[in-house]
Length: 530
Image (tube, rainbow, N blue to C red; front, side, top):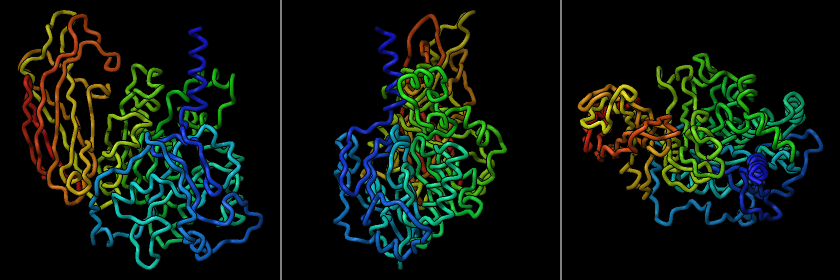
């Protein structure tokens, strides 16, 4: 019986792990079971026939496409979301859109959605100008336009989304575009390369449509692997022509997916239902064979001109976190697979790896977390990069009896970072970075005796803040670990001990601050990278 239940779990992992509970659709919408970190149901902007296939090679001009996009907004019937996916705050928000934003290059930000277990079966149109209620969240925070609201003669930034699942090309494709999609599908069997080609062609289309000079990508989950392929394969020459300005990856399948890489799990799942090619393409083996190795310093040079940030979620209470008991994860994606440790040094931040932030949220729960939305909006608005580091710490009481077989105490330091300015303008009080003990993702520092001082150089924030930000609030605590599978600590004596914590305010200028807990004292360094 237990084995039968276990097999049912395995089936569910690969056939429904990204499902949405809302399957309602209207005549002009395409409802999808998209893996969600904000990957909710997508609907088409008003056009005459949302699933019409292109039957000739006539090129639709930007003016014609714009005319379709600008049809009566009342015709759009957004798919209603359940309370579990609502993200719009109930309080009023002041958006910091000022002249600094208007002076930037005109840009389009494309949200790249995640995995849908039924996506490969859709006989719908892909790559069209779509609408999703989650865009409203970014519009509210950033003040950006959508394809429905922008003024072609006077706009700065637009946010949009497009589905990469489907069988029928959009109206703006010509014969060459269709041939490209057919060729990549034939070569790879569809999957990630096909989706990336669709997103790249959409990026070109929407820039030509609007006159935007550059494109940004905000990707979630498997959408990050789609974006990675788009960049490293230089699809539509977006990377080589330096048209890609920014990339924000949320809980991304960057290196692969641990469960999709387990041949036994996939084999069992295939026994009951053939898995889509997406599963194969999310495996470590396939990615290593087809893309640059993330740990190599020779990663694609195209990243040198792209401002990049990775977000990792660490709360493993989603249904499948139990499959990775010793691996920090968000319930679906292992933390170690959501980011690159090294890149070819970026032009703007020479010598620094891409920014990397953490939230203690589940894979499916991140969409509801205001702090994550604030982080994405900050990245799209004028900002500065800040790194805050716990450079050293003295532990007065290590809470450990050391002896021959137990020579050291394992100490971890957790942190949360808050922005008073974000609270002021957006009324968002959530942390903009969370690196908590319960995540299992913190570095372990070993102390041998009371009163010992160690150089730690533990990063507690490496991300972006709005240009106007003058202070951050840092909250920290320390723990001595005795029994933890995630930390790999199994001391015979004792349980987790609290060493106390504190909260301090730091000014955003290069300098050092002292933070004092009950049994420890630390030094925090602030570095403004740009």
